[in-house]
Image 1 (cartoon, helix red, strand yellow):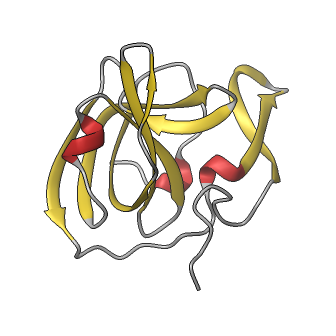
Image 2 (cartoon, one colour):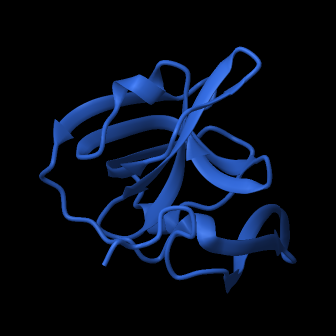
Length: 137
């Protein structure tokens, strides 16, 4: 199980993690695909999580979700964590999970690692918290 603070952008499904869903945006329909963006977090960091299809209706704020074989990559110029075609999401609990909302891993500017072109490294923090789901307090 990887902590959210340790995820990095990659073009492969290899992220196994657990987090709590904090907030969920409105659903959008693109062609035949329904999507919605959510803010999720664990005890180390937060990230934007892309829900697809039936996942949009299956999860609500307060749900604790386990992700298997997830991917952290760009989708329409936004860096999001998602299950993708090969990943799987399951509800494993409700409400009882320690979390932090900063740093938000989707609000970090990543650049290719000059020592390894297949990896990314953090270059700068764009915002300390989610600009899509700003703190309420």
